[in-house]
Image 1 (cartoon, rainbow, N blue to C red):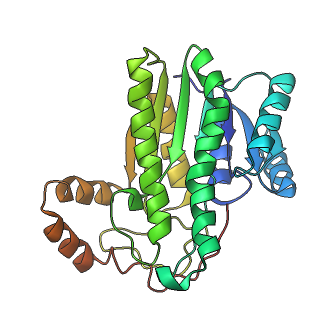
Image 2 (tube, rainbow, N blue to C red):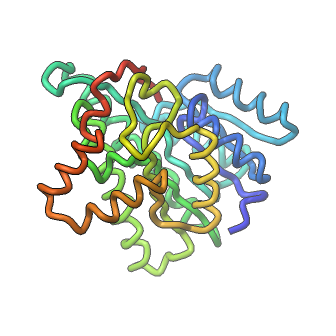
Length: 270
């Protein structure tokens, strides 16, 4: 799929990884639509893209508020028309022992990371199906396939994103809608501040937002179904999937995967 000229909507694009994704799509010539809960963030990234010599537009909405999503979709249709690519990036995390984290934070994690992603997809899916060629890119996490103590609800939400993506892809195939490709991106820790204080597992390191953003663009271009970053994490996952669960858990402990959140002091955010 040629990304130049395609309308690409990105949630949570006002900062962090979402901002990097917006800038990368702008560089390849896409018509970027920046969305975020905070309007000043939207305006800042749109201005940054214009400053680079590219075009962008922006809208503020909260992914947990279905009526806001629908209103923005209707306004977007009036302003520019339907989208060709949807990147579901908005997310949050609250680290700590499960029982010590207030219930409302657990529920907020699910609401933003999973329910919000589903709500945005539900609203824009008719647009994507109607286009001759389109992409749905869901940002999950390496925690979608490996246990992550001290971030259990975050991991649960990302497992949900992966399961949703896999199931929707097969549903689209069954209905002959193969022109809409569904990609799931599963990166390890990214240096955006969201996971400040974590200790990446052995054989991995903190990923830069720019590195992940390039991978997102490649996945959209190629229609890749599943992308795990970095390569060492993908290798671990490939090997672990062939092992008994007890052995996989042992190796993850030895590599520091299951203790990586011990010193988390990051910020919650979208």
